[in-house]
Image 1 (tube, each protein chain N blue to C red):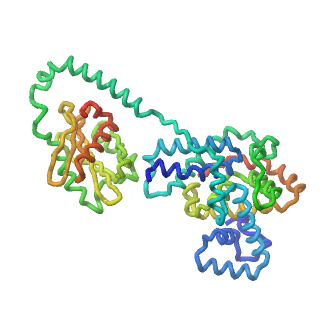
Image 2 (cartoon, each protein chain N blue to C red):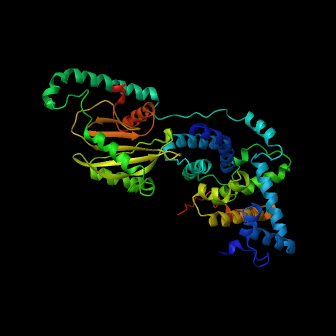
Image 3 (cartoon, each protein chain N blue to C red):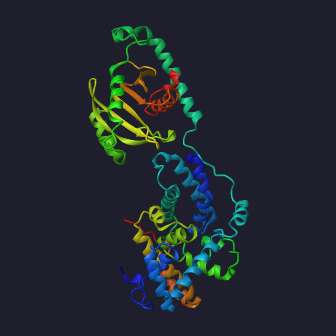
Length: 180
Length: 280
């Protein structure tokens, strides 16, 4: 399979990940578009024996973090926050539970959200996640367990407690922390 | 580790990282068995694992990840409302590049017509051009190929992992900015390069290798000769395509079919700023 065909084959998955990460369909589609363009323009930088999916996810992540800086004004509890406009989740799990889950997901700092999505939804191995995120496996493990625990606490505290806790966390979710 | 990774409500010795890795199937067998044993003993830890498992399943449902059992059906449904293609804006389409090349070709032809009669005087008639002996840089390139490509342990002085250093070093020694064209499209990736003594100064050899271990070399050195079109030098099963462009002699050597090597040479030539269109 040609390099381009391989990139194209990963696009549906990149799109799903971008949507979950950003909570915004239009933004996600732009991110995937930019990622594909950059990947095809820089194909010579890709080593054939390395992991294409991790490479694409790394590109997407860099683009997302760059773009996030320009959009920092969006507060998580804002009624107009992009993820509020996502279509109501459907499926075998109760819709209201998924609403809460969705809310909790976008309360997580980006670093926790991305590792949670990469491992739980995209089913990356820890090794692949470490490549995609550019951090050691140990960091993947601790970030992931913190993300899970953070989510669990957000989901188990009642809405009232959540609101109280929310004020303290309000600025955290969109804070960009660069990895050294 | 810091306090975040442990939890006072969990028994000692169980850290959250291990429970988390247990859920993802990332623990080695021995550790997995240990965690399983602890889960049987400590209901709190088991509850934590159950909560995280539920969280994982819910996240997959939220994000539209296909459930394994109905993956195919779900996939089809999802793809129906996906954009079927992605628009990729390429920086310069091929026809635009070809157009620019054609302009250069016309300009070059005009210049050649205008200056052609002067050429023998300028070069002193020293080189007859067509049918002449191959310049010694092509022979040197061919020999360098034969000497260095069989090397398994030290094929190059500076490896491709230090590509920036390699290029800046050789550019400095050859006293002009070099660039290394990518041959990934043909399945050859850069191994690295070395500095060699050339005909009248230093020369650079870049080595490429494909997955089956076949190697190509690109030899670059200064040359006082006029521009040449592609020429071919045959030596045993080795083939060397060489050309001179803008004061530099280039030679691409390898034991592969002439047609294939020629098309790679065309690619390399244009990547290095030459104008192979003029020679086709």
